[in-house]
Image (cartoon, rainbow, N blue to C red; front, side, top):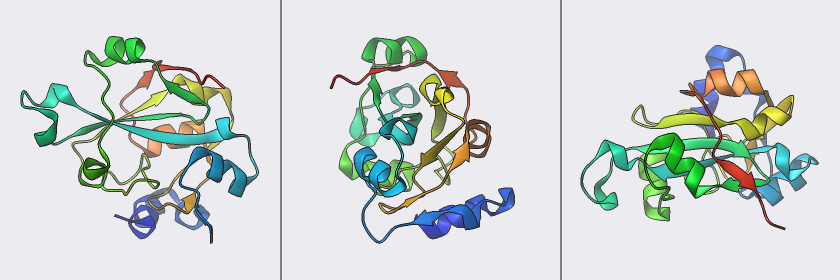
Amino acid sequence: MSVHSVRKFLAPWGKSEDILEFEESSATVELAALRLSVEPARIAKTIAFYNTKSSSSNSDSLDSAILVIAAGDKRIDNAKFKSAFGIKSKMLSADDVLRLTGHAVGGVCPFDNPPESKVYADISIKEFDTVFPACGSSNSAIEMTISEIYQISHALGWVDVCKERLM
């Protein structure tokens, strides 16, 4: 998928024309914050994990992902993740990112994902009025309110699975 498919996905909410595209990469939290002139915490990164609950086989043959929308300055707390989801946190391999999210590394976002993907929002994004998730490419973003990102991403619930990033 691409920024084009995300644009189409966002159209029913009147948000397709709000996507920002940059000439340079915004593939990391730091680059996105630089392009948008905002603090890194306001970048709503989408972190992709294997959904090992959906299959009894090994992770190489899994067919779904858990996607967590989190503030850009946070990282996953493994104990909190296991408590919230009942499984160990294991991020998708680079090979599985596109297959299980529909987006390439650097453009993973909470929109226009395969129906098997489960999206959750971490409470860390509630600190802000608006945040900036990617939009399916390594050089795109969109500003959204917290309620917009939650609703439009079809988030299944709020979770508390992050800890502060050690600087």
